[in-house]
Length: 334
Image (cartoon, rainbow, N blue to C red):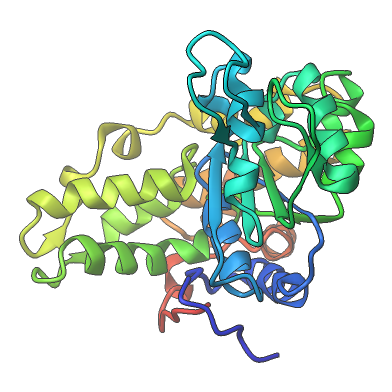
């Protein structure tokens, strides 16, 4: 399948990420509602922009809304707008963000933080793409493509009665689950190369092997955003090669127990997570810790875990866990 012609690059060589991009390419030109699911920092906003730029609406507005940053009492007026005199201080009528996005795309980030009363209003809007401004008496119709994003699987919040099931199904027409960085460590060297070229193009910096091993072994709770910030920071001080000494303390001295909890945080924080998912999460984290403690020697890592080498290799293959030797010939893909 030919890549979609878009100015937005999603940097990856990971097999699962490539499969996701192929799926996204197929629905980019539709009007279907898309729900992006992934931890903070995985790149949900980049995916939203990619979908918009790959669609027929690419020349129209893309309005980004961080729902978690808007006070709950102001959500209605921000999204739907208000009429003059609707409340104290409303000296003039104002368009809401949904009107601003007319003929384009609106990206509703952190949809999982929206209170229940606002969920009802969003559901009514999605049913016929109509709404009334705060203090208004007439319905306003807009043509807008809705992309929303959640830090956690909304199905979990539905079970906990904190998210409306009917709204969930309206938003979840095309779900896109973006894996965390710790589950696609084969992308880490590629992303490092990209960020070094972006932040220090004149230095020709390279990562020394011990530093690369530490970066590959770290759990990256902040995902790609955290990696970007780390590379930006070290690129400011490094001259030729980036060594272990230049990495942040939490990467140089990551504690095994802390890494385990961070890597499996959804398993510990959210209820209704399936038992098999918890086991898989723990297995992946233990294999990565064993690889780190054995300096990427699979035989030693298998012995640390009390597994046969063949069983260890099968599990590493199952979870796409690779060693630095597999990170050569980097490819930039979109």
